[in-house]
Length: 114
Length: 114
Image (cartoon, rainbow over all chains, first blue to last red; front, side, top):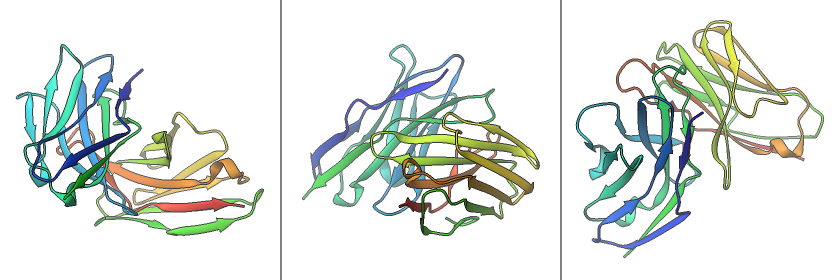
C-alpha cells in the first residue's frame, strides 16, 4: 500500500518570505513523488517531480522540493513567496509497478499575504 | 488543459438517476484515471484504464462503472446517483513509464446530486 500525509491543512506566509509545505509518504519500493497545484475553480497542474537522481528538484514558478529518503519526506519550498502562489497544493506518490496509480495527500492551502 | 477535456463541466441530477461523465484526450496516452475530490479527502481514485477495454477498480469504486472503447475516450457512469456522490470529478492521463511521468488533468466536472 502507498500513502501520503500532508500534516498542515493551512500554511500562511507573508509575501517575500520563504515558504515550506510539508509532505511525508509511505510506499513499498522506490517512490515517484509529485507536487501539483490547484488554483481556485481550476484543475490541477503539475509542479515538479522526483523520480531518481538529485535529491533537490526544481519545478515551475520557482518552486523546488527536497527528497529525503531517511525521513520519507518530500517538502515543497520556495525562497520568496508571492501573493499569486496562494492555492491548494497536493503531494502525490506512486511506485513504478502499479500502472501509474498515484495516491494523493489531503492537500494544503497556502495563503500568501501582502 | 490542453489535450484533455471533460464534459459536462457542471451537472445537477436527481437521486437514483444514471449519470455519465466523459473524458476525451488527444495525447494518445495509454493510461487514464478518474478521481473524485472532496474536502478533507484530497483526490481518491475511482477507476483507471491501461488500454482499450482494459480497466480496473480504484479505492472508491462502489457505485461507479467505466468504459473505454477507444484510446481517446474514458467514460465514468454513476449507475444510480446518490447524494454521497456529489463531488468534483477529475480525469487524468499519463504515460507513467515515460517523462514527465506525472498526470495531466482535465478541468473537472462538478456534479451535484439532489
